[in-house]
Length: 197
Image 1 (cartoon, one colour):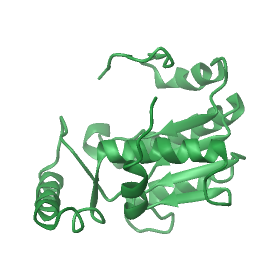
Image 2 (tube, helix red, strand yellow):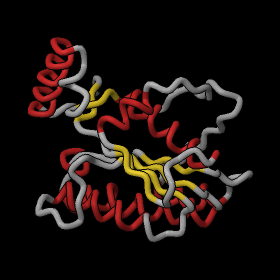
Image 3 (tube, rainbow, N blue to C red):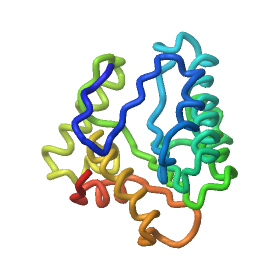
C-alpha cells in the first residue's frame, strides 16, 4: 500500500525490490539521524515461518546495518512484548534475535518499542487476533483505558511513542544508556506526547 506524502520535509523513496533498499538508504542525503523500523509480516502472508524470518529478522538486520553505515545515530525498532532470543516460540525468538542483533551495530541509541496487541483496523486479520482486539477494546471501554493499555496499544499511539523516543535520543533527553526499552505504560505515556512533524 502506498500513501501520499504530505510534508515538504518527507522524501518518499518507492522501491518495490527489497534487495535495493540498502543501497537506497546509503544514497540518502543528508544521511538520516534516526532510522525507524516497523517492518514485519505474518507467517500466512509470507507463506512459511522461514519466509517470515527472512523478512522479520534478516531483512531488518540488513536494513539496520545499512542505516548505521549511512550515518544513522539512533535506531528505533517496533518489536514485540514477548520478544526473546531464548523463546521456544518461533515468532518471539526471531523478534528477540533481531533485538539482540541491532544492539551490537554501533548505534548511539537503540530504542526497542515492545507493544502488546497492536490495536486498530487491518486489511488482513486472523480470527484469533481479531477476537483478542475486540476483547481488549471492550476492556478499554469499560475501564476508561486502564485495563486495555497494558494489553494492547493503538497503532497511532505506538507510532507517536516511537517518534517521541527517537527525538528524545537525539536531543539528549532520553534516559541514560544506549538501550531504551518501551513497554505498554511507556508507550501510552510517550504516545500521548504532542509533536509536530
